[in-house]
Length: 147
Image (cartoon, rainbow, N blue to C red; front, side):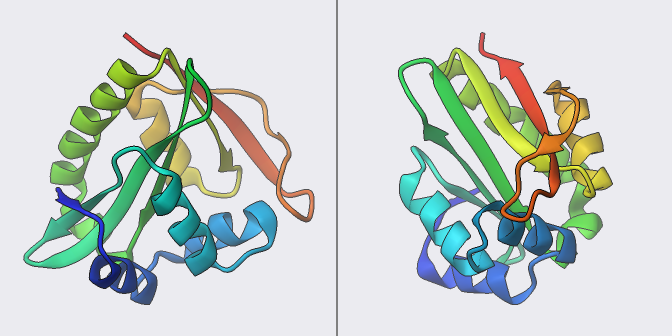
């Protein structure tokens, strides 16, 4: 896990997973780069998951208010090759987010089944999908209580 910098952002953008690109671009109609840079800038502690010097994923949590944190993640096509170690790191990072916030909330694209399965494994409660994207795409609200 490394702090995020411009080189790591460029690596993620160059190999971003198609489903992540679709999800990020569906949020507000911005490019994946604009959404990622906004997420990194707004985050408390943005981190990059790096293997053999290459960025595989990037994530962070944004302080919404005194109680609520908004976690986010973007992954690359290399994530499947490092799934097990990534899950271990994610579990640690989500635990740290739960220490910082009373509740974690966000929305996940209903079309992104791998992300939905991963979030459930991490303990997030997935609510019924609702129109949320810029064009009315369906997203599942997700929540996880802090410690």
